[in-house]
Image 1 (cartoon, rainbow, N blue to C red):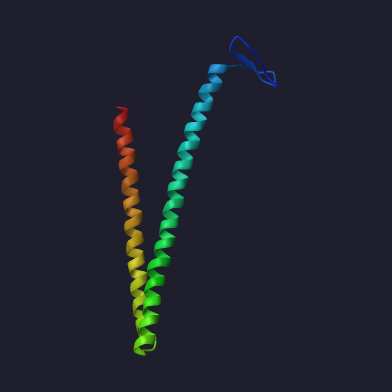
Image 2 (cartoon, one colour):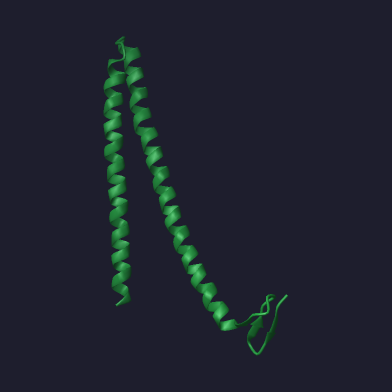
Length: 117
């Protein structure tokens, strides 16, 4: 339980704290947490997008290869070829996702620094 006197707060530990300083510290802490949460959510979004892309492209190409092998009566020729092509295509797509995300992050940083001046 804390008591106040003329805009100041006496904390439970007996420290005399100015209310204005408490508000400033709270605002700084909130800015830091918002920044961390925003970056953390961006990384989770990117990880999810990479995982979904891997599953979709590689899984789709393998399923198509299996379907073609069964229809045409070949032994895993299309499965192997389309599986390899799917892996290559997935990693090309992931590379473009990551580089475009990094470019957006650099642009955001540059725009933020330019507006401070």
